[in-house]
Length: 181
Image (cartoon, rainbow, N blue to C red; front, side):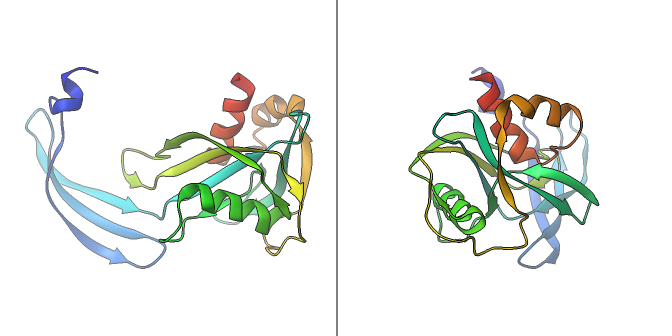
């Protein structure tokens, strides 16, 4: 790409101080200067990195999803297996482990689709998205608060998105990738 990646138009961070910090969230304030020369303090939020995986059936026509409640926005929706990265785990390991723990399926092959920031202007929280294939039932699920998983036809996914029944950003990225393929 051009010079924008090399510094032109870059926001300069002179320092950042922590206002609050625990294992789930860190709130900070950064002293910044914009490319136009304006300086001010900007809030920052740092959340743990997450991984999500779209597990496809052997035909490639169904995806393993749960319909569950999320209390913070107070919504019900369809989601893929996923979770927060442990410090010692690679994103792929987290995705595969979460699939096994939440669904009882062991994923055979894993493809990295994207790594993205869901709220890039204020929040740091890399989300890693994968597609898994060759999954086989291997055990009973060990996480019971993630909803009950079922094989959802990919032919239904567009309408679920349009109806607002899929709202999780990682789930949307994974499913839109599959639909575009």
